[in-house]
Amino acid sequence: MKIDIAQQKYATTLDSTRKIPSPKQAEEPRQSPQPGNSAFSVNLSAQAQQTAAPDRVDEEARQAKIAAIREQLASGTYNISGKDVAKKILSLLKG
Image: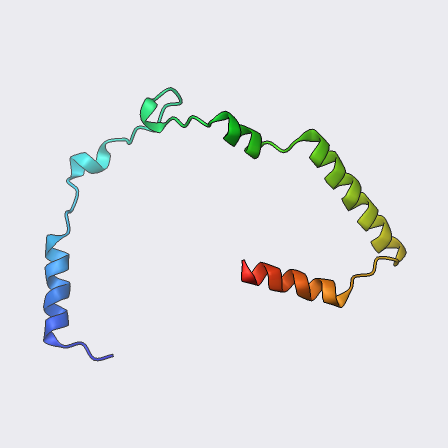
């Protein structure tokens, strides 16, 4: 890469405009956000809270399905169709 005079001047300008903190600023400890500080608080709606927390029934069904697949994998009876895999990949790529 060839660096010409214009690029060197631009880099010098950027370097000279950079603000260098004074020693006082560097020594001051930064305050961490407090839990009760309104500037850092987040309130979730009831719908968002329901979406964020999975239903117990859904989670139990999911765990049962995972256990069944694990058993099939262990016994060597789990069979996946190549067409199903291809369809799933294409559907994920399409969005």
